[in-house]
Amino acid sequence: MSAADELSEDGIEREDARGLLAMPTLLEKHVHLDKTLLGEEWRAVIPAANVIERCEIEKRILPGLATSTKERAENFLAVLLSYGSTYVRTHVDIYPKVGISNLEQVQAALATYADRLTHEIVAFPQHGLLRTKAKGLVREALRQGATHVGGVDPATVDQDIEESLYQMVDLAVEAGAGIDLHLHDHGHLGTFTMKRLAAMTTEAGLQGRVAISHAFALGDIPAQEAEEMAAVLREAGISIVTSVPYFRVIPPVPLLHKNGVSGSVNE
Image (cartoon, rainbow, N blue to C red):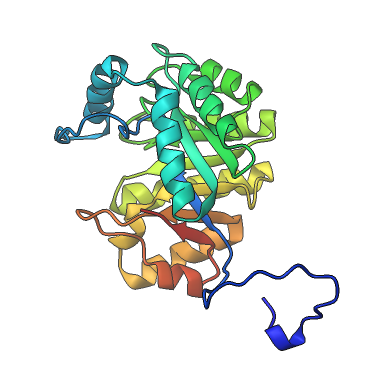
């Protein structure tokens, strides 16, 4: 952005901004367009004890909604655009019962706004990459336009950190895709998972193409350990996509920024 007195006005079309400030648009780096309820009647959130229970609730509710996934996703995109977001990274659930239908519906919604926003799509096996044997479906989603491999809690959902991460990285390398891992696990379990992902990322040459969403473990470890983890993430080129959950300790964004870890804060 340049000062007005530094710009040449030759041949430039002028608009009266009426005192408003022109700024770059926003990036929304973490949404689930296939699971929004915008356009439906309001309903209270059903409490869930863990990720797996939440998945089962969603499997029960979403198919019975009056509106289509495409319609609800379009409603959500309209809201994002109205608040200045023109770049969206959305996760879409991929699991055996629905196949890649969520991907297809979300792609149709994104096509509606193709002239107004740019997007990335994470093929997200929320029910567990290993737990639901979803590797083949994720591979198909990548062939059909998904840009990133997703995953969730390799320890507590897939119950095999090494194999879950290995399959994610293998899919990403095979497809030339990025990775965006949901990681809710706290403490040592969470940081150990991050260290293993960092090692695999470097080994596979995926630096700069891997993100960890939520990364709650970074917020509940001592500051010195968080500094050490920041160095691990920086060296592997892994970014952090955090949010503002009211019931969790979020990653220390200023500490990460100071230590050269890129990331974004989303609602």
